[in-house]
Length: 78
Image (cartoon, rainbow, N blue to C red; front, side, top):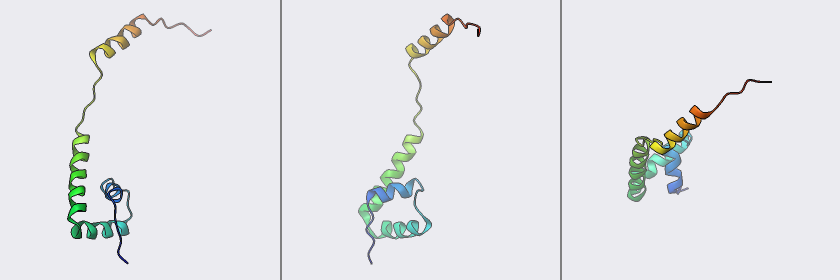
């Protein structure tokens, strides 16, 4: 039986969400199907780039939080 793998299967493989048996089958498919291998390499690159993204809040957001903190009067529990 010929196993057909989709891009979704490759994404699961990249994120290590496949079984050991599936890994072997997907690796065979990657070697046999140039388009699937190309998608796999692109997916690895995107994953790597996404891991490098650093998000920081805007200066305005930070100032709003600091202003709220300065103006917050902690009231004692009754």
